[in-house]
Length: 101
Image (cartoon, rainbow, N blue to C red; front, top):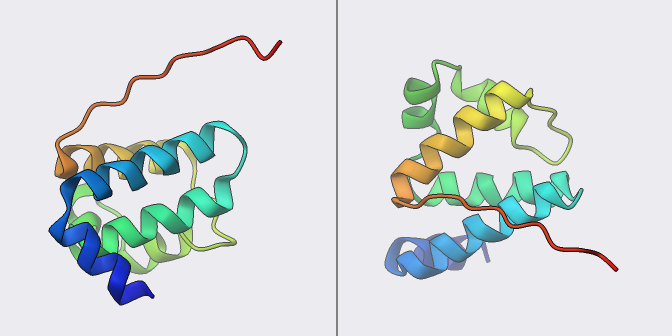
């Protein structure tokens, strides 16, 4: 399964962007565990954890832990990770709030 997702991310930039969009949506809606796991898959398929470590000045093993199911990255670390992915995918993030009523 993971290899299939990795191949699809590499071959289909729209799919990679859609996964990234989903991860951001999940974070903002309280589903951080799933969001971290999606970000992990995106990183594995694109930039890789070694390059992410260089870009964020954080050890690769720490980044793996941060993006695990039980990970707990600080807001600063998460922001740095998201910015590196965003730049790698060449996308911007726009957030729109809507009434829940």
